[in-house]
Length: 112
Image 1 (tube, helix red, strand yellow):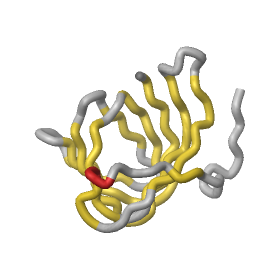
Image 2: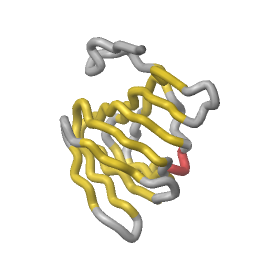
Image 3: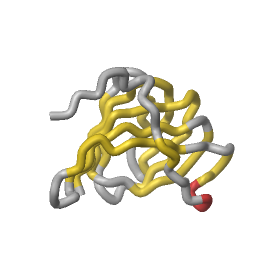
Image 4: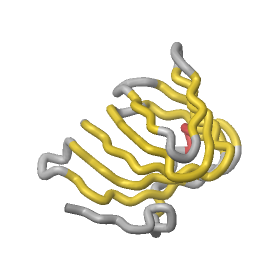
């Protein structure tokens, strides 16, 4: 069992962002893995990104936005407007573009 009080204020560690992913701005990514399954195929944690526009190729992920706002455009698919309390499911292989309007913090579960 893992209990993480104060997720909105939890200290996070730098996670270098590949410069090729940055479309505009100077976004900074931080995060913290809270739990990982013994086989490394399930990961739960906290992730944060400051304003800017980035691209990504997604994993199978469920996340809940803790704070901030962003627009997530799925290539060839939908456009998601996300904010505090919103839950989203991303599919492995989806190519996305994240436009982060306000520093976004999310709690996530990834299945590899």
